[in-house]
Length: 106
Image 1 (tube, rainbow, N blue to C red):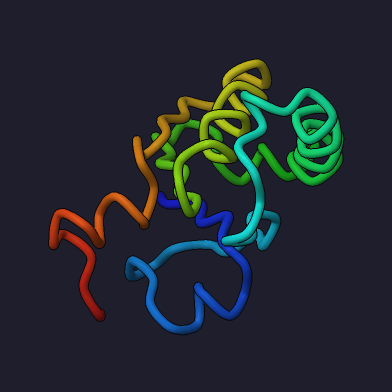
Image 2 (tube, rainbow, N blue to C red):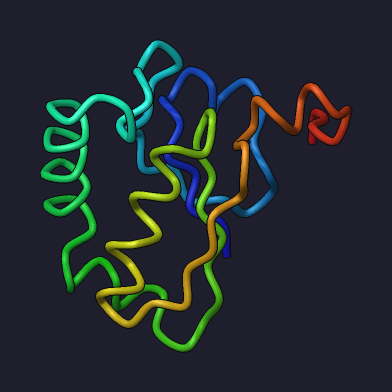
């Protein structure tokens, strides 16, 4: 399964088939790993959205987490793993995929 954290507009333009959209990542968001106040805000947002009840959707499945640049995806992956979800982050996010030519229109 793929959990796409990008905003609805970006998701609507192009996304991996079968992805579930949880719009919490926006293209203009700063890297939370270099801005502590942003890290705290994004962690709280993800912690509330990725509730234990929500995580039950992924029980027994491997989950790929996608964000714009991968930062929000890494943070979400940590929370999901803490809740026993087999989550993996797509390093570099959709932005890196575009630069390498891997991102397409499905």
